[in-house]
Length: 102
Image 1 (cartoon, helix red, strand yellow):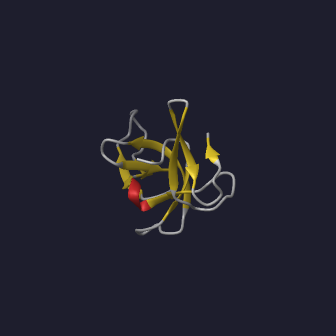
Image 2 (cartoon, rainbow, N blue to C red; image 1 turned 180 degrees about the vertical axis):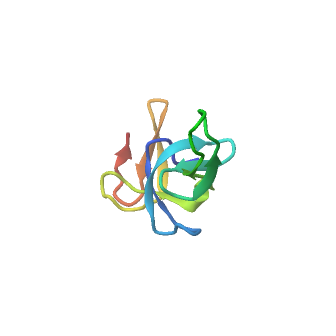
Image 3 (cartoon, helix red, strand yellow; image 1 turned 120 degrees about the horizontal axis):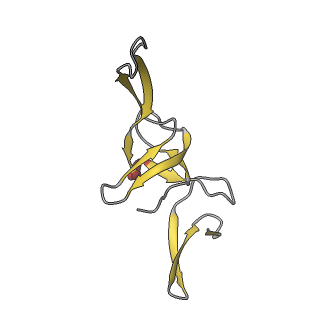
């Protein structure tokens, strides 16, 4: 999976196509990500204390990582990601501006 927690992504398919958001959680083994403000689901919550009312809360749902494209922090454009191996470390780089990402 080429995206990780903290990256800004652009959604390229689905009902939220064209929206940008930050990755809250990445699940590499499942190939899914959780992006804030994207794929919102409504969850009914029961009251926790006596006399309190229940409520409906909007929560982001998981989306496949293939539906998101990383937005390069240097050139601020959505781009594909490549890998460079140097000093036995694997570093990601933007294929548009050739800048190494963190």
